[in-house]
Amino acid sequence: MIIWGRPNSINVKKVLWTAAELKLAFENKKAGGAYGGLDNPEFLALNPNGRVPVLQDENLALWESDAIVRYLASHYSNEDRPALYIKDAITQAKADQWMCWASTKLMPFFRDIMAHAVRLPQNERQPEVLAAATKGFGDAMKIANETLNNSKWIAGDHMSVGDINLGSFIYCWFEIPLDREPLPALEAYYQNLKNRPAYREHVMLPIT
Ligand SMILES: N[C@@H](CCC(=O)N[C@@H](CS)C(=O)NCC(=O)O)C(=O)O
Image 1 (cartoon, rainbow, N blue to C red):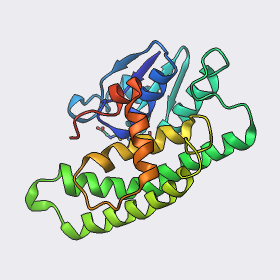
Image 2 (image 1 turned 90 degrees about the horizontal axis):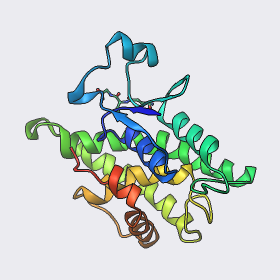
Image 3 (image 1 turned 135 degrees about the vertical axis):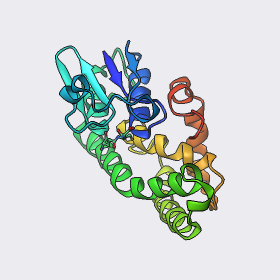
Image 4 (image 1 turned 30 degrees about the vertical axis):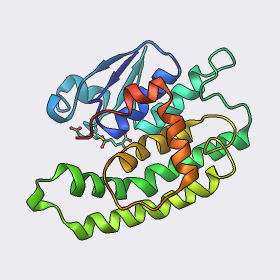
């Protein structure tokens, strides 16, 4: 199994973390960002969008991080390998709901936070854009916090693909100095994630 992508991309992190939770053997081929290579014909044959991550698993080449995470979870989780394994359709639907929510609701705020708190040169950062994104992300975190008041994981008693997305986003939320309101259930959830070796190895990288 090959996972293409630079490890500091949030979408690549989701896939690497999932594969590690499932204890899969894989090679991470670095591509994108400073590694380049996304416009190589060999890479474009795998993903004509020229984006990472891409998963190669035997004859399958799959792009879109959420599709890859779902594929790994559904194909490789089972009772012998229980990480991310969910038996019932309703809990799986809840997990998918939170996965979509993180990708659609959090991503625009996340991009602005990364740009205006970390990546842009100081003289190009816009404090008002950062403030609006911090407020938007913080309001969304209140929704997650409400759910986590009543359950250990975002979709219930079991870790799921919903946690892969939410967990990947909240690392930067907690580790970049931002104006955050206290949200005890979310903070406890983050502490729990930090105890997972796969999360530490693949998500908790220097923020660049
Ligand atoms: N919706 C896609 C987004 C893919 C995407 O935009 N990937 C970014 C990294 S997060 C990328 O390839 N950027 C170009 C680069 O890294 O050079 C997914 O979830 O996989």
